[in-house]
Length: 193
Image 1 (tube, rainbow, N blue to C red):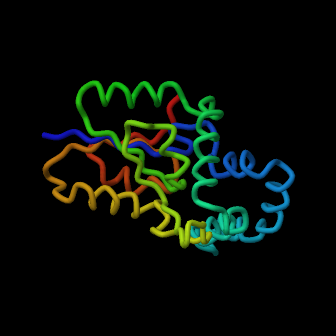
Image 2: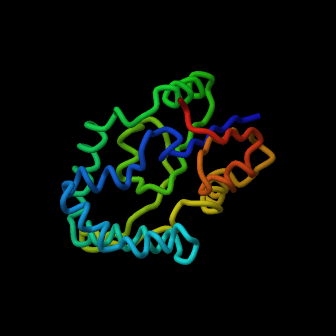
Image 3: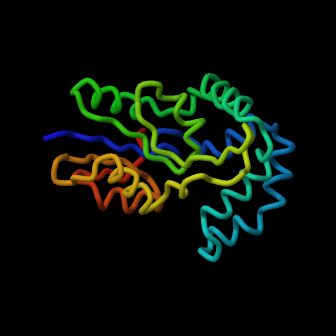
């Protein structure tokens, strides 16, 4: 039977939330701070369950990146990955390598934007939130649903629809991973140390 390993990214494989770290890297600490002050009320409402997670995230993303050329954004993503390897948890990278060494399929399933997650893992398929681009520029909107909660399961099923044909091991560390962990044959609710 085929073996698939699905890893959450933020918090599970990393020590920090990469949306925050990426914005700080791309825009600087002062612009980052002002942007988050501007949307603090939405972030509080989101944490309280009164405002959708994806909507708050998209508003923040739009504020910082709407109108940027895709090539410039991708260059930032590459530079962020190259300078942020310290955010990765060594035990998580070791687990990915072990899964690959045994011939298993490995997926990173993340609510983060796949443009900045993929450069961390050149030989692993990333299922992340995808961004909309028109005329070579970011619109600030998401092209796909935020890859959070049930959407993580949906993305795996779109690649591997015959659930009875594979054994799924999943790693996550937050509420956004609950459905993925419930879907797995072998769930692990913990970040790597």
